[in-house]
Length: 206
Image 1 (spheres, rainbow, N blue to C red):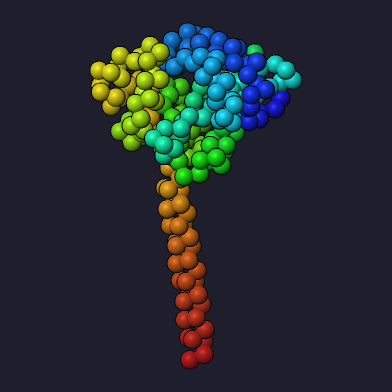
Image 2: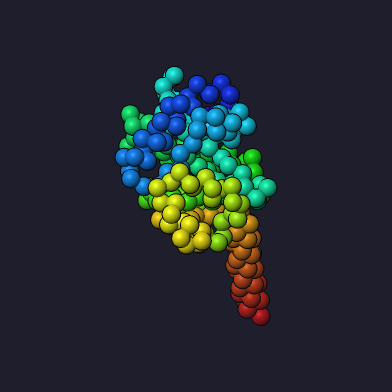
């Protein structure tokens, strides 16, 4: 099995990807926004998708969407074919598309809305934090994509402030701040060690 960045040559899998997404939504009975083959193919042609293949057999898929002029990106439509579920494939695809998002859009905040606990766990391992919907993109094109979800009426009734999905966000700026803080703490610790060593030497010499 290989997990690669999709391109236009993978357009032949668009129909089965859409069917797998729709079937999964029906089985789970939860909100998964449906997509057309044309929509999926566009993401492939733009290099904004990841596909998993076992030879010529479709295994799984996930794509990247840009919002607010690239200030936000979302890793959407994560799906694994029923024949390959329960083998950790989703986690591998999620990691691949997240890394691709960070490489292609390094300044963008990466967000996700999901009802699935496994996806929430994967997001947490990648550094996402639970947030309110107010911290996510304000781009109405994104929220219109939820119209095919069975829970869309909940989103409308709450003026997009909440739904059955949980909002999660990875902020690259927070990571930079955390790394800076860690470096500062390490520096302070080293400074204390040097100061204590210097004092000990002075006491011995006095």
